[in-house]
Amino acid sequence: MEIVPVAFDSFGVRSMATFIKSETSIFIDPGVALGPKRYGLPPHPLEFEAEKKFWHRVKEKVRACEVIVITHYHYDHYNPRDIEFLKGKTLLVKHPTENINRSQKRRASYFLSQINSICNVEYADGKTFEFNGVNLKFSNPVFHGTSSKLGYVVEVLVDDGNEKFLFSSDVEGPSLKNQLEFMIKSNAETVFIDGPMTYMLGYRYSSASLEASINNLIELIRRTDVKKLVLDHHLLRDLEWRKKVSKVIETGKDAGVCVCSAAEFAGYEENLLEARRKELYKEFPL
Ligand SMILES: [Zn+2]
Ligand SMILES: [Zn+2]
Image (cartoon, rainbow, N blue to C red):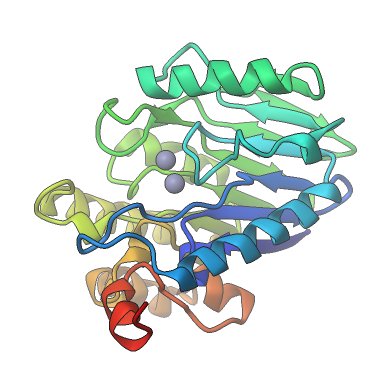
């Protein structure tokens, strides 16, 4: 199995878009977005450029896939305005009416009404699917964060018989035990997690949630066969992310587990455009 991060926050856009090449090729969360406001500023033109570039890459990779996963209905995980390239694919999506908040329910209903006639759509929550010897196992819905306010997401395990890959989606941590449970049970060698939302620490993300996330990530390292633990998305909106999760990185080092961003995993340099937005406006004034 080849695991390719296609667009991530560490590449300069809000996304967790991941391509998996195996007997059946799979794309998880084909969406790319930008933070609408950061430091009171709208996205810098360099961010719009990155958004365009990575959306093009996402579409290119999706064309090579038979199966597409959509873990929830936020626009950094799918794109309802551009759907033609999904024609003929099998879509495994978060259930559109059960365990969902009002805004995502509305979005799901609109998206599925557009897509139902051109794709084979299946609701994935808690289910297992098999394509050509590649298993996709979905968690039951878990909170998007620490409560149901932002809705629910599904985590997904891809297992091709040789290797296991786990994708957390937007758990914002994981700070909750039931978010961690599926990860522990999955026992994957490669794990992609969105990480704690430290850039909102103190107002929309509590230090108790951060501490719980750190402990849960350490537990994941200790109790599973994980070799590569990628933390990205929410965590990579913070320039100081390594400091914030230093205990996890240290534990990883001791256990021979590489804890890194998606950019590092892919061999690129990190490009935290959103976290550097203030600087971008100074360095490249409009
Ligand atoms: Zn989300
Ligand atoms: Zn997201």
